[in-house]
Image 1 (cartoon, rainbow over the protein chains, first blue to last red):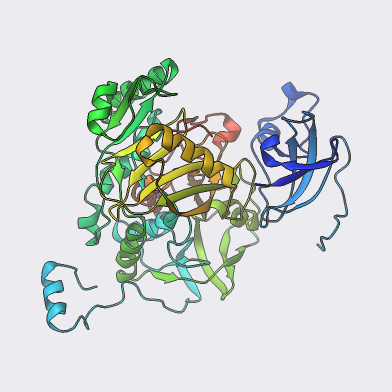
Image 2 (cartoon, helix red, strand yellow):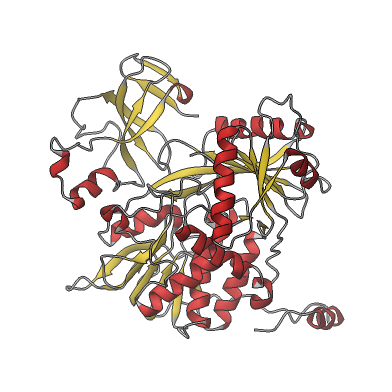
Length: 98
Length: 417
């Protein structure tokens, strides 16, 4: 079971308190009806599914109930960091060389 | 290839078993092949086998980063069934089921296909409605599936707890008698032997690190840990790593990879005569011929390539097993493991040509690909050989996520996920 640090509660809590909410930083179009099929597919279905560093959303559903973002290595399942929703995608990651 | 038979056993018994030959050869990779298959699991090896036997294409290499059958082929719970809801799914899974019947004879290799029946339990009114809908849809498609009362379910699987006092009482069940299990390793080994004997090169410990394309975009071959290998046609059959390989060719996929866990108990005498699955309490169980109970758990909730998964997922499944079979409460579990499954948004596979000329993909089998192995290999070989899909896999395109023509098989694993 993963230990996840909620950036709002500022605590590491067991995975059972959280729900994964998929890849982060996928912007929803302001004009969804005007999206082309190609762009809608990209938004709705296509995922980066990286082997390595992933940016993903979590929700502290059995805690503060808020959404936040996390950076995790999908090979080791180790978290690099978590940060609050709305904060920009971190350009430099602590402890990650590439 | 020397044929396996009772006479071969007698002959070898007479001469100290010195005449058995290797089941497949391990050649050095050539510079160029007609077709390269990426991934020597069941689906990849079956593809190579049918390329050779049905289409006469034998200048084929199957590249495997680890060892043959060491991925999800060796990690699944070996369940075979074709009771899927939609016509497209029924078509491909029943195509596979028909090939399972007779596969041991065709391969001259005992894959131990055992049509012992797959029974899916209903615990509430909603389950009854869903399963009866499946029964009727299946029968319209010519697939056997029948409704059982709790008493009939108990008769078919005596250790099942059908007490009305159970927390989730069994109120009925759907039974596909042709469903069952097979020996997963033997499937990979049998196809490997059959393909190798027809000239297919199976190259293990050879990881694909890049997909090379010409100026016009067409595939020219792959970079590997053993150097560049050329081919005008490349079929990607890499399960949980399919999107990683496809990214090398510049194709982003509608896939996410999750850990899926399974476990086996200590071996015991025969007690579970069939496969039992329950969507509502989320568990499935069968007994291997060695006597181990084979139990499948659910996927973890996050993308991962770690081949592990959380212990609480196993615990949840064992809670359900103990609910269904109270006699197993004190059973010891022997081993557990994880595999990485590639899941599509509609839970149906992708077997198709891709936007890249000469690149084909067979992926997205998610939590239930083993049962489809022969059918998947058969139609994927057709797709590669003819550069055109077989009618059975024609609906399973990549483009369906753009056009919206999904095959929304929420029942793909018969369990919620």
